[in-house]
Image 1 (cartoon, helix red, strand yellow):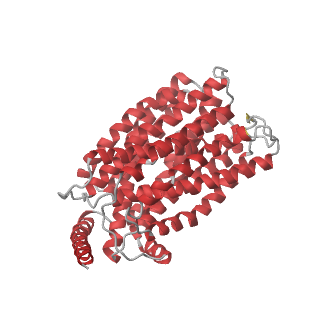
Image 2 (cartoon, one colour):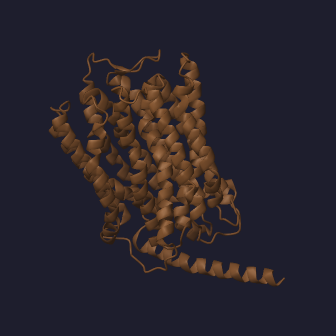
Image 3 (spheres, helix red, strand yellow):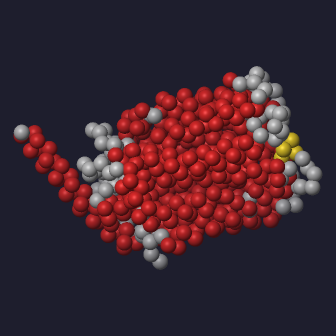
Amino acid sequence: MEKETQVQEKRYVGPKEIFLYGVANGGQVFGYNIVSMQLSFFFTMVFGIPSAAVAVMVFVLGIWDAFNDPIMGGLIDRTRTRYGKLRPWLLVVPIPLSITTILLFSGPVILQDVKSTAIKIVYMYISYIIWEFFYTIGDVPFWGLSAAISPSTRDRTNAITSARFISGIIGGLASPLLSVMIDLSNNGVIGWDLKEVFCFMGILAGAMILLLFSLAGTKCRERVVQSEERPNLFQSFANMFKNRPLLMIIFSNVLGTVTRIADVFNTYFYIFVLDLASYSIIIGIPGTITGFLGYGLVPILKRKFSNRQIIALCTFSKAAISVIVFLIGMNYYDKAAVVVPLLMLQGAVNSLFTSVTMVVPTEMIGDTVDYMEWKTGKRNEGTNFAVLTFVSKLTGSLSTSLSAAILPLIGIIVPSDGTDPYLNGAGVNTSFWLWGLITAIPPVIGLVQLIPYIFYDLQGKKLEKIHSDMRIRREELAQSATARAGKEGEE
């Protein structure tokens, strides 16, 4: 059994910086979680936009991301400043990203007296495009920084784990808080309708971005020595397509798109089947605990298995527990006393392994950066992590688009006149379909995402040699840069 070899390395990053890097991601993820999990629900049930229009918009912008994100990554790779090539972007983006997040979720309030569906659709396109643009400018350099924050693979793993772990705490507050607000609104406790609830959440998310996400640019550093030569965009794209390990990770993530639709349909299930959105809080409690414990599994698993084997183990485990939960609850899916404990069990197991897969693939992207530097002498954090960001948004967009398209097929009708969605109920068991879509269907189909990893070979002795060679090469680059600076100082 081939596993990653642990090599004793010099450490460069202290615990305070690792912690603040994680807090920064929490500030960004709080808003992102609302978008990724509630976008379809927000646009259809709150903004009153037909599901077909939402599906088309998300799909079209997903295609745009295929060009936008790599271009952004190429621009980052060309950046050379005394602050590095990633931090300058992180110093600038929090303000516009905060503003656009607020505007995105304030649309129903801003246009509350507007009856025209066409105007609402135009606002949806403009606000989402601008939000997505600034999100890309922030997300690509943030994750690129995880590979540039230190030459030490241990430091990188710690940084990624911190980012995932702390964002799970801070960003994880978004969904339960929103669920509580929805129930308080529906029961007339707070005097706000859903438009005002989402507006409030948008303002809160904007504040989190401004206060917390900005820490990535102000409190974290780049330590990996970069070449002075600026690669052109064509070189960056060409290197990306020559990077076979990176392409395998991309292909796997795209195939795993269907696994994300479960998150989209959760809200519909809680509201239409269980009649209480706040069940999501109760159901999420065990997963919150095991999710944190999952990060502690990473070093244990890495001592026994390769990264590829870890991903396979986690993917099969999540599919297995989801099928078991579906089969046990298939005749009781509308009974809260039965399905709530079952979903708590599923959430506990899924969160445990999801925490692991939140760290390992991101670390593998960093390995692909080292791999291309080893082959070409140039680092492409911008391009490689732009691809990670693109794939994340693409799968999110595709899952949202797919979910919106599925709604009428399972009997959830979103009228084009802006009135509340309702269950059709004619010839289709909507509740049963929702049960399947939040349990077994996504993870079972999602097993196809393991196929590309059969061809992923950046592990074991090969990866060890790359890391060893690059440590020597970076020391030589650093010595050369120091000598050159000394000569310039004498002149």
